[in-house]
Image: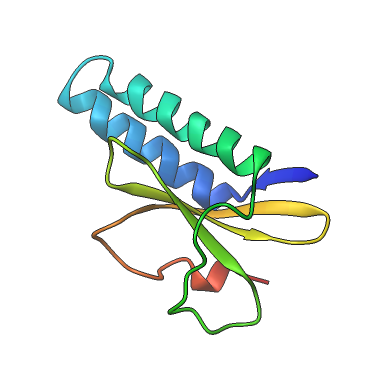
Length: 102
């Protein structure tokens, strides 16, 4: 199955890693490592993460939470691909990524 990260989601991940790195040397790398681990879990079992029940649109949206950081990988599962639509802070701007769905 194809795995794709939207440019906006990639930008969010980079911005978060830079923010954490500015707080403490090496913390940005730890964020990236945990995010990649979440990506691996999604690739291995894309239906394992919970669906976003409060989203009532045409897509099945799921959210894989990071363990150490207040971020979630928001993605949709299609028959032939997984699309990461956001790397979203769990306490800021809920559903800001809705306009990224096609």
